[in-house]
Structure formats: structure tokens, C-alpha cells
Image (cartoon, rainbow over all chains, first blue to last red; front, side):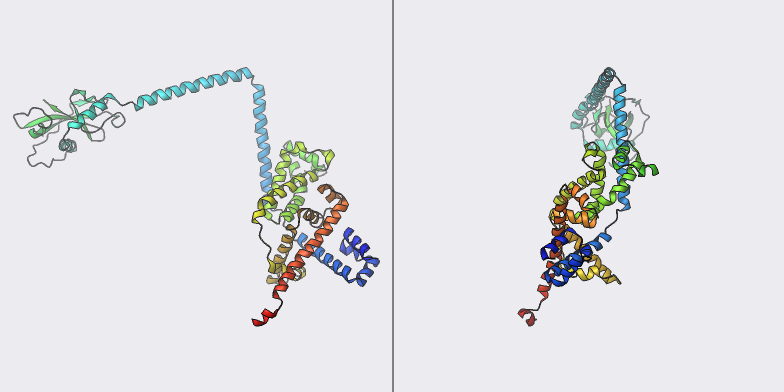
Length: 240
Length: 206
């Protein structure tokens, strides 16, 4: 056997099978180059066998994942085919009418919502008046009014006895300040949504001066204080 | 389930598509090992092999219409999908491929063929096996295909030729060339290392 024949045989057969051939064995013993080549091939085959035998197995998690994918796909197909059959069952005219009705309802809903929103965001007329009135208000009087509502004595030295009266008016809606009330703080429908109370209080004559009202002879004036549900005074009116 | 075992793969795929879960499981059991092993040895990555296997079965269900029995068996069709996926992963992962560890490759022959009798040896052996896998994964693709299919997946030359769409002779020569390259890689790296360790004139100074 020549080297060429031996190498051709080595290429077409497994190395371990080649060693069983008598001619090949004789050539291996005789030729050092071919022996070296044969040994290398034998070594590579051995390494490959070890690597093959130690190959990783398919993990169980992969099996579960593939099965889950399959189930999802089948479920998706079923849903899609249901949708297709439903579309086939309903005549196209009925679908068109249903669509038109749904669109109409949607537009009506949107319009209603838009109108409501506009109404909510409009500044109420009384709030404008409140803002105008608050410009001429003395801050000290505001404090006095609030303190009186909470039954706390004012700090002024010559403070007269404050008499808390029964509410003269029980407002069921946000009262308009156009009937003589002066604003003590900003008030609109958002902040004063609930009904407010009017409390009549007795104040010293000095209070009447900044309000530009006439002072009484007995040294006291009466005022109506508009109190919100949170206990904070919103407006005040001197009773003439 | 027993009556499904004898059915051909194409029939199992049809049943699986119609919603027969048992048919799908039988088909999966038949194909998963080959696909997983092929992808594992081609990429030398467990996660990549899992990804390929999963994708192959998704594609089989999605693109079953593209399969024609006249062109070959379903395993071949699935293998074609796996091959494309492996190529795609190879392109994606090329930038992140680590360089081989020279020291491990030097100890390869002794570590690989010796019997593991203690923990250090087992570790060396595991490293050596990993190095051979890395060497296989670093072969040029057409040689790697032949080595993986014929040596590691134990597919016959004729079947490998039909999967790779080439002649049996081509598979043989690629396999032979692949073995030679593999031997060269392992031997070469070992030689490089021994050259580094060989005492030279400068070695006497240390």
C-alpha cells in the first residue's frame, strides 16, 4: 500500500476501522509520516467521542416552554378562527349600522363631556365680585372675623364682648356677594361648593371706619360674617 | 398517544397544527434531541441551543405551509430552520466571542483521555472538554457542519449530505479537513505554550 492509497482510505473511513486492515496496518508500521497522521486522526476521534458523550441534555424547562408556546399558539388560532366565523355570521349591513350607531353614541358622549367641562371651568360672576371687593379689605378685620367664628377672643385691649347670634340666614347655595358682602378670601364654586352660614357678630366701632360705614352711638357695630363649611370666613357685611 | 408513535413526522405536524397536543409532543420528542445537539455543538452555548430549539418548533408551526414532503423529510426541513438560526446567532454573537484559554488547551490530551478519579482531575477534564468544544465552534462553518453532524450528532454521511445539500464525497472531504484543522488547532496551541515555557538564553537569567 502506498502513502497516497493509505491517505485516501483514511479520508473515506473511520481511523479505528482502518487499523483492522492488514495492508493499512503494515503501512502504518513501515511509514512514520502516515503513522503520525493516523495517530492524530485516532486522537481527534477519541476527543470527539468524549465530547459527544458529555453533551448537554435538553433541559426540562425548555420542554415546558415549547409546550407553553404551542398551547398559546393553538389558543390564538382558536380565538382568531372564532372571530372570523363571527364576522362571517353577521351580515355586513348589520355591522355597518352597528358601527354607525356606536360612532353616533361616541360623538354624543364626547359633546356632553365637553359642554360639562366648559361649564365647570367658567369663572362664576360672584367670584369676580369677590376679587374686586377683597382689594379694599383690612387684613386685621379678616382675622377678627375668623377668630370670632371660632369663639376665640380677639387680642385687642379694649375688645368688647362678642355675642354670637343664631344664624340669620342659612344659605342653601353659594350666596351671591352682591347684597353687600365684602370678600375676605377668594371664593368660587370649586372652593365653596357647599352651603355657607351667615353669623351675626358684634364688633367695636373702630371696625366700621375701614369699612367706610357709619359708626353707632353705643360704640359697637353689628356685622354678618359668611362662614364656609370648613369654618373659614369668606365674606363680611356691616349691618347698618 | 401510542397510535401516534408510528405516524410519519409530516402527519404529526398536520395533527399538531389542528390542535392535537399529543401529536405535537410525539413530534417534539423525535426532533428535539438532534436539533438541540446540533445547535449546542455549533454554537457551544446552552442558551443559544435552547433558543434555537424553541424557535425551530415555533417556525415549524408557523411556516408549516412552506414544507413540502416531495422535497425531503420534516427533520431535514427542521434542520434547515435550525441551521439558519444558528447562522443568525453566530452573526449576532461574533462580537462577544471569547478568545480560547491557552493554558487549558495545553493540558488537553492528558486531561481529556484520563479517567477522572478525583475532583481536580474532573475539573481539568471538564475544562478540557470545554476547550475541545470551543475548538470545534471555532472551525470554519462548512467544516464545523460536517464534524458536528457526522461525529457529534451521529448522522450517516448520506443523510448529512442531504441536509447540507451537497455530495457524499464533499461531506467526507470536509470531515477529513475538519479533523485535520481540529488536530492542528489543538496541537498548535499546545506547541505555542510549550515554546513559551522552553528554556532559552534569557531563561537562564531568571
